[in-house]
Length: 183
Image (cartoon, rainbow, N blue to C red; front, side, top):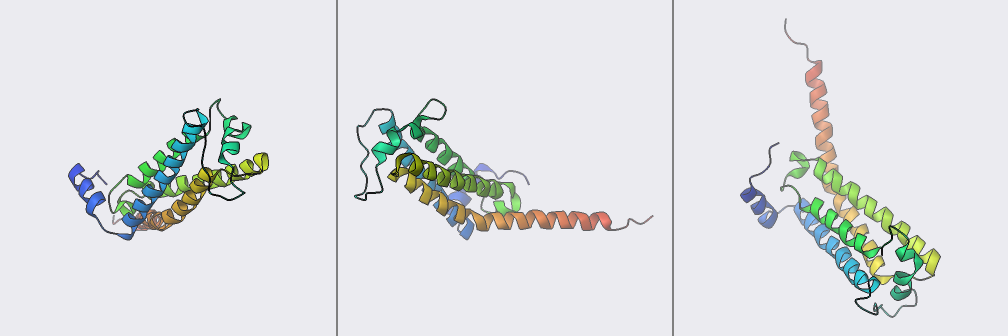
């Protein structure tokens, strides 16, 4: 499949209507939830703002969690900037390709599903670490976990269509290969 002309891609992404596009748009929006959460926490973790407000629930203490060893133990940097990057990758995968990418570029929805599943597993694992090390949770990180859960669920239908497309192509190729050629 050749790439769509830019004008057609623009038209499809902006004006197209399909359940897959609707879910992709939600995934992009939810990715921005994670990006904004990462930006807010980065401001705190780098000293730009002095405090992270939390909802009035005893389970949350974002200041404690995001200033703890847990939040700075990887790569000699705070962890929140990585949230921004990973959210950008997810949004990019959701935005890539035209309206019919499940049949025309099936690797894109499959890659998106893989990325959203990695995000979900990573968020859950980090939430477990966060709790084990601090006995509190970061509200912003947990907002990202909720967003990651929703994006993974939203990515499934298009990925299933893409997998079906690939499987039908494989079956068609096998069938074509087994047809005897006249001699």
